[in-house]
Each structure stands twice: as structure tokens, then as C-alpha cells.
Amino acid sequence: MAFMQCLEMHPSRKMTVDEFKAWLQQFDANHDGQISRKELNNALHSMRTWFAWWKAPQALKAADVNHDGRIDNGMEIEKLFNYVQQRLHMKICQSDW
Image 1 (cartoon, one colour):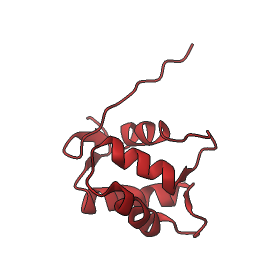
Image 2 (cartoon, rainbow, N blue to C red):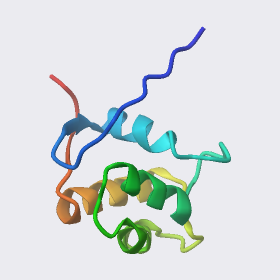
Image 3 (cartoon, rainbow, N blue to C red):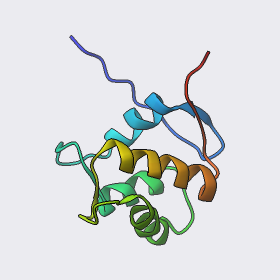
Image 4 (cartoon, one colour):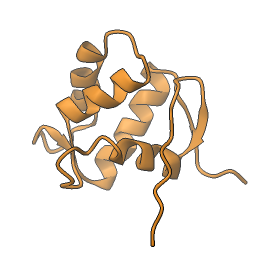
């Protein structure tokens, strides 16, 4: 039996890449393995990010390499990491070690 840990994120909280991915997947409403603009908006809103409705499309635009309107591969997730670290000031590190 697998247990999923629910993580409450705050922009100033330090987290690992795996924690960020797990947190982001909580907002994959249709469980297709991709994050849409609406799902990303919900994720940012959960952090009480100001103007999440505006920042979600900006983050998607910065990270969506293939321009399909979704975050759906490793390169796009990496670009999203970079965006949230630089623009939203989230602290994401490679591991806890």
C-alpha cells in the first residue's frame, strides 16, 4: 500500500526537487501526468501567491518548450524549477544531503 504525503508549500520553504514534483502532482486534477495552466494556477494559489491568476500563465509561458499549453516533460519541469526559484523566490535544492 502506497502512502502519499501531502505537502503544504510556502514560497520561503526550502524543498528538494522530488518534494516539488510531488507537491505539483497533487494539482494534476485529471491525473494525466501533465500540468495545465489551470492546475498551475491552483498550485500557486495554494501557496497564497499574490496574483496567481497572472503568474501561472507567465510561468507556463516560460517553461512550456513545445508550446502545447502544458508542463509535460523533464525539460519543461526543469524550466519551471528555474522560473519559480528566480521569479517566485522558492528555494529548491537537489537533495537533503
